[in-house]
Image 1: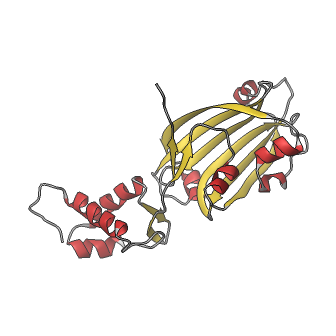
Image 2: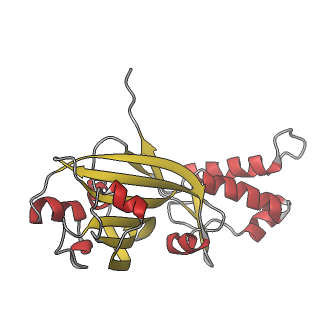
Image 3: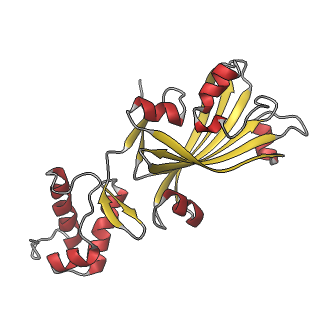
Length: 240
C-alpha cells in the first residue's frame, strides 16, 4: 500500500492514505481509526512512523485522541469570527450545537493587582472568579476563567452560570454590552488543563484574554479562555 521507493516519507504517505479514507467516509465523523499497532502491521512500518502520521493529523484537526479510548475522526472545527461580541452559549446555538458547561469553581475573592487594574477597581473591591469547562454537543471545547466585579453583578450565583452570562447582564441587570479588546496566543497545554480538555500532553492550544466593556466604557469582565486547537479556529475578515 506504500511506495517505499518514493522520495515521499512513509509517514506522509500514511497521512494521505488516512485523509483519503476520511474524505471517502470510510471513517465517518466520530468513528475510531485502527490502533497504532494495527496500522503499523498494515503498512509494515514502525509504530513511531504511524504515531508521527497520526499526530500530524491530530494537529491538522482531522483526528482527535481520547485518553484510554483511542483516536477518532474529528468533526469540522468550530469557526469563530473575530468580529462581533458574543458569548460561548450564543456562538454554539448559532451553529446548531448544544452548549453546556461544567462548573469547576465559583468564588468571591480579592483580585490580584493586574486584574484589579484592568477592571478599573477601587481598593477593596472584590471579584467573582468563575472557572468552567465549556462543551459543544458534549465535547470539551475550552476552559474559561471569568473575573466579574462584585459591585456590578452583586446577585451573581451558580444558577446564572447555567445559561448565558451576557443574557443575564443585559436582561436581568439592564446593562448594555458595548465592545471588547482581546489578545490571542498559541501555547502547549498544561497537564491540569489537558485533563479537563481530554487531550494529550503536549498538545497545541489557543489562549485568548478578553476584556469586555459596557457602553459607558466601564469594564465588566475579564475572560481568559483556553481552547482546543484541534476543535476551534478563528476567522477574521480584513479590509484594505
